[in-house]
Image 1 (tube, rainbow, N blue to C red):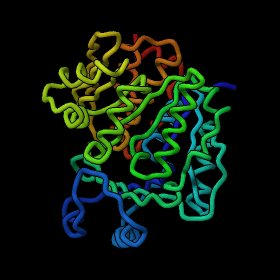
Image 2 (image 1 turned 90 degrees about the vertical axis):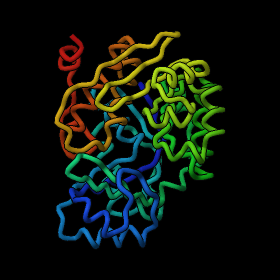
Image 3 (image 1 turned 90 degrees about the horizontal axis):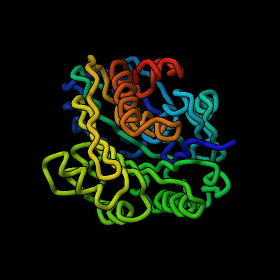
Image 4 (image 1 turned 30 degrees about the vertical axis):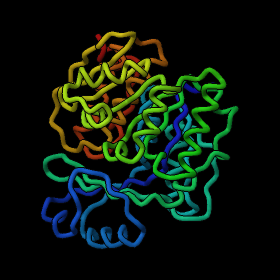
Length: 327
């Protein structure tokens, strides 16, 4: 069986908690960004939240996108590393139940975790301990699996570690060798300071589709206007999907800027909005939709996910629902 999309990324168990700005201040946590932590700091945060209700979900940026594609009826696979622990077992069970193929067996060690702190303004602040997921390496990438896909989807966070970067570059190399398209998501504005040259090489080289948000596009290009940013990236990259939060997105395809409107919604938690947008676009372009239609689907999927707690669609989207959304 072939895959619409083969994802490569971190396996992170999301631990979602509603809290307030006072808690962030008391724990000296910078609001609204993702911060990498170690196991000791993660335990300190979790201990301080012991009286809060928590919600567990198998996550990771690319994993959320891959699950979104499966929830829309697409076929998907994911390369990641989980630990031989309770979180790891739950992670693999959840992904398999959702229909996502994972070939890599659990490894001795702790599964990565991400404490997602959601404040009343729907902002999410993430504290991530990568655990065993940071040991994903080039040997874990299997050519025969990559060759079955229409697209390979690479998470930008992988470029923070030597072995995970090697895994990402191996997946891209094997995709190109087997005529599989490559999509890259920047993942976070702070990565551009660290990985700018690497990202630039990929955008100017093997990447067929770049996902980024407005802040990432500005940091990448040095320009202020989103259209100018999208056009600057499009000079080097065949397709660009630039998200603008509640204002929708811009898709660059064949020299044309395709505006996609946002969907009005009461946002409760912005976790996974960009991931779910990417799911809609990737599902669309691998299942016969136009780029504009794929952008619309991405907008609707993102709107659904921010209207509730967590980075997953509340219910899978049926083919009839997708058709109705695009009508």
